[in-house]
Length: 428
Image (cartoon, rainbow, N blue to C red):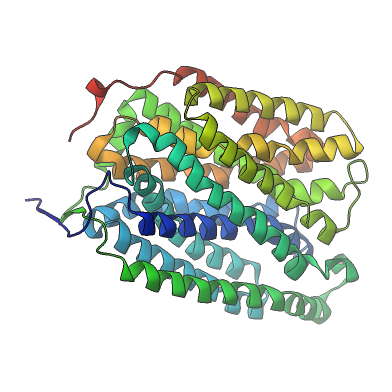
């Protein structure tokens, strides 16, 4: 028999400023850490002399965690509540950061993949917590705008972290050509180059520990209904709702496309027919991609108060497809900056797709968040396909893969342009 209890604190639907600040901090740090993969990919590609398809296993290891952990994470939220689940996620992230120490000391690629998987498992829990949590910290009518504004802090993290990471992680790659080294010399080079990776992730582990302690101190601020038992597989029956299923598919497509573009940006800008930059300089351009998303989310938070979210989503997806076509069929600055400009139009996509898909779920919002986070596995699968396309057709030709993904998002925006009526609300 399933039993529930309600914890002490302020009821959902009310504004709790200090909790919003913590949620903003969570968005900032998990966004920043995720974007560090865009800097780590060219680093590991060089150190381990990998093909594009092989190095995309970095993203596969990271985003596979969403497929495996999301539904169990939703069950954890039901059992312990949003705030305690956030602490679990932060401590798991801290463990993943600490695993970069043995990974770097061993200079074994598989160890990096393990560290990334554990780190991403913690981020998955945080994702399952934060998206519905920010939605309930206020009125349902402004949920689209509020989630987009919260995602702006995610974009702030993705703007700051790659710039600093490119200096720390990519700064010395140009000094030695790893393809010319073998045996003990190559192993020594790998260990030396990964020392900054150790320091970077040690700093992140310390920050995550502090944030976990702060969230724990506020764990009783929100009144929550906690279930003694949770059927984690029941969540998938939400896929019987066409709007929710289409939205979950679009999360798969969007994350896959966004991660694919972010993963190839450094190598793309290094091409002689684009900007011809060195690795560190190209890495310093990544924040323009994520910074565009930051600006776009502040703009989007305002626009979404007055314009149908579905229409805004369709417009932005159209613009991204056009920018991909321009980048693939041009050279020089036009090619490079049109790719970087995609970040501006990516800005509102994840929160808008999430909110549109989740409309009407009511008390099953946590279940919906878990299923949607499973769909983030697109960040593991689409980049592998994009990497294989890059090996076969070059980086410009590979842009056709994310373009197909954005066409699907365009269709969902048109499909979901009307708000769900109150009569379709799920109550159980």
